Image (cartoon, rainbow, N blue to C red):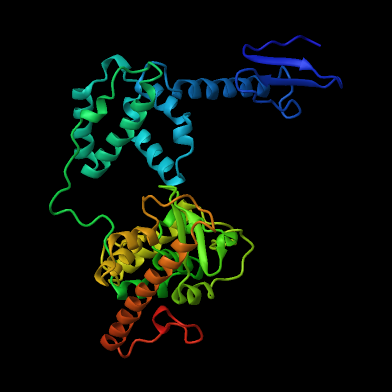
Length: 374
């Protein structure tokens, strides 16, 4: 047999006498049954694998560049322990900076970053420019102790102000909008939106509620973003909504139509399709977001006279509350039950107002109670 050598590939006979071949750098194997050694197909496959490996190598961040700094931060424990939503946010920011990833660290300073900040604001929005700035602050913060950059130049970049005519980022929902959206949603999406609405939690947190976190009529969980202990009473409204959920074997309280835990992207995609359709049909005003449901609960409670501490405890906002321990948070659960009762009373008041305003409105399915039937 003629000895064949290909640069970058190892060709050998294994202990069973079978010929093997793989690319040294990537470990990619070649199926020698489909592409016998020495054949035109074999050399073509070798060339293809080498080309792919070279292309991937070109994409790797180079040391001493902005891309290299971002790569270092993405390997930091600080980043790896962030919530999935934050990771997704930072990856998005890195994607925006992709065209300038080869910028040498030696040329990075505040004037350069300010110019980039201005350009991003013009190309995208003031908000996205500020989010990229915040991301760079984190990157530089963790690269300074490693001696990779001398100063956190991003901190001195002045944030873009929110335009006076900019719409509210997460506007509150009108009661009629809540009802309209839930009635139009699929059972799985409805349950998810109702859970966000009835718990006041961030969508990412609500989608991750596990069945084993439910006890004594309370959902016990720490918020992903703040890691603050959460003791969320399950209201009668939510009990009614969860009774609609099709049975599933997912460990999470909520599940997609496949019976598996929601991914945030899957949930966001389903929500976007529904919102687009309802806006096109003129059934809801623009600007609805799932996170706006969290703001809706807070708004209702403020209007009902609850103070910031009570609202923060229920919504699991950053506070001095200790991490979750059932015994240590029993008092918090009792306190939050009182706050949730106020929310339910406010809900009932708004539901009655909606019935008076729309006396002919009926539930879309008479065999199941709608949100306003509770």
